[in-house]
Length: 270
Ligand SMILES: C[S@@+](CC[C@H](N)C(=O)[O-])C[C@H]1O[C@@H](n2cnc3c(N)ncnc32)[C@H](O)[C@@H]1O
Image 1: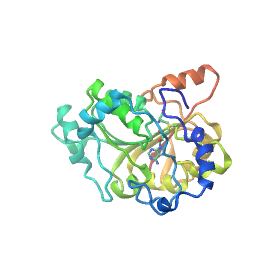
Image 2: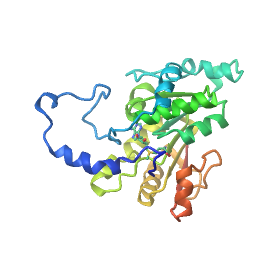
Image 3: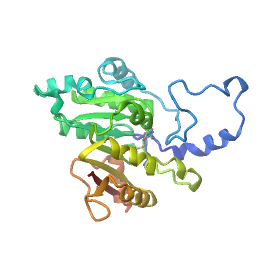
Image 4: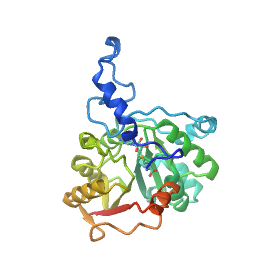
């Protein structure tokens, strides 16, 4: 899923990075991991892509960022404390009653802002590593005056491992994760057995995992891996109908008109 309004998929960027990976890095940089990645040697589901942050996004970083951005930390966060402001804004006295949904890889945040506006009674904890995407969602948060989103601009796998306690989530959204089309890159796909086990363990019983993709081989992989996870059960027979809350983004709409398929999967934590 790639257009000018959408974060490009790493597959688009991969050939160059794959080629440059073969060239030896300059000696003085060889042992320096990216400063914000705690475990640089694990296979990542993303590549850092160059991207221009617009003036509007930069302004949103300054104005909205301090209230919405949560720094990555290698220890558990207190979700109730993090979303106190969201509870206040929707007139709830009991912030502990608010469900929390994790979104992994929100891209430019179009679906995220739509869903958060639709459900002010829920908390949305959203991870994205693409800086212009983070800026774009911050801008949407400002424009729509949303109070129920917090962003961790960091690898979601590390966020899961270190910041989120077991059975702390009511839902997880993974919409159009990078498909990593080429066989040699398939290992980078996010939705594989170990990650699905981590997600299932962090969901509360009755919580859900909703994934969507427009790449059929990845849809098949998702169905296989999710069905094999013992803590999860499918809410549909195979693929699920698109839940109403997930908007048809401009890009997805264009793909559908061209006859491309989209597959939703909704599994429940037992
Ligand atoms: C193809 S885009 C889809 C974006 C959005 N969900 C949509 O439907 O338009 C996938 C996004 O996931 C992000 N991503 C991939 N792996 C990630 C990870 N481990 N943690 C956080 N974000 C990640 C990428 O930076 C990219 O923006």
